[in-house]
Length: 133
Image 1 (spheres, helix red, strand yellow):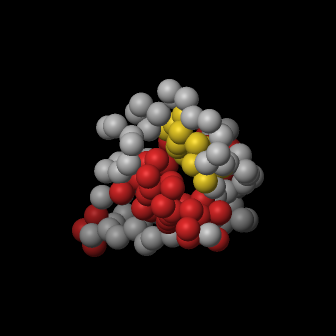
Image 2 (cartoon, rainbow, N blue to C red):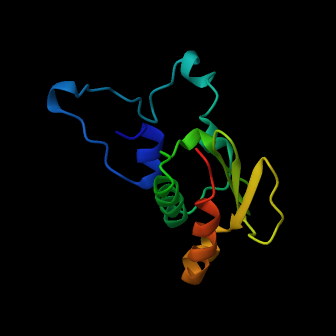
Image 3 (cartoon, rainbow, N blue to C red):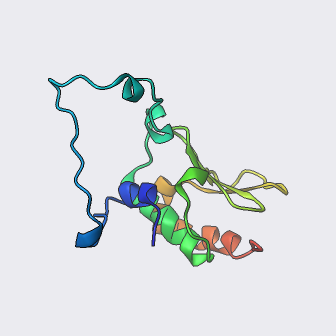
């Protein structure tokens, strides 16, 4: 139903049917890894030191679902201050709702501010309702 990255970020348990389970053996600290494993680049989300807060991430997912959009982890960018989410026609920037919007971006209140001050949900929702799919 949800991509594995989204399940991991939401902290959900991935459910797998018993017949589909595969046992994999991971090397322990004493066992050396193969050169193939050591040459691989780490996943993109681990390259960034900053991670979006779990509650903020859940709020983002709920807001995207409210506008009939399924959250895709690859479309999220977080630089420690603002969260950007790329929709097909526009980029949502959760940082400051008072910044002027343009044709390609929509500025909204930061997710942490929305969680701290629930009264900010209304103006954010009013702007989100204007998005054309």
